[in-house]
Image (cartoon, rainbow, N blue to C red):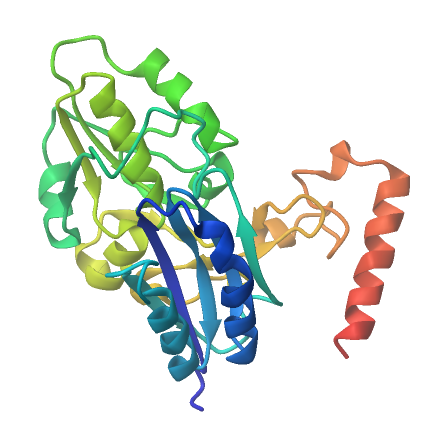
Length: 296
């Protein structure tokens, strides 16, 4: 294998799947057989997740998922890594593949207008556009599109109330949204359409597709993009970034954050030092020591 030996496939699909529970065990067994690692969520509304492994094995799992009665036409966004982006394989059952908590929202019936990455800059040039980042606050903290509003939410469930409170009450607002891979925008734009907003747009393929497609010299993206695996962040060309996670609070840390006096690897960072007790810090330190031992 070459240096970038891990083939990473991020995927989701909204499709009515009443028999999703029956797929959990055979899917897990197939992934383990193919030595594929990652995390997949199954629900009655579809599938969401990311898997990684050798290219041919990841493709085998994607073909398995597209089998009769499951997820025909499933697409994946591909990137690469030289080290394992996950530690194990998990297949979990959920009520929603992305938890918004608004049962009436159905992306299979109604979503906003998809905008290709190559057309996104042109849309953002509209001075009357309201651009909204739908991701959680810790994701926005390390990068976003220039001029985007940050709802400062901790979970996606907080997004609908934020929209109802902050969306301009003027007639016919023009709204554009974006997220990491596109899945949140399927629900957030569907929600806005349901609320009566007519002009709603979202970035097709999400930030990841934009960073893969648009040259850095032409890009309106600032910073890095948080990803939910051991890479932590990626930049233009989907090259792995320089962020790591605080193992105590899971906040993404830049090299500058890691140079802070309150940072101790595996134990604390400037964002959580005052939020944990001495006893908790001792526990984190012991956990980190054990982790180092097991990875020698």
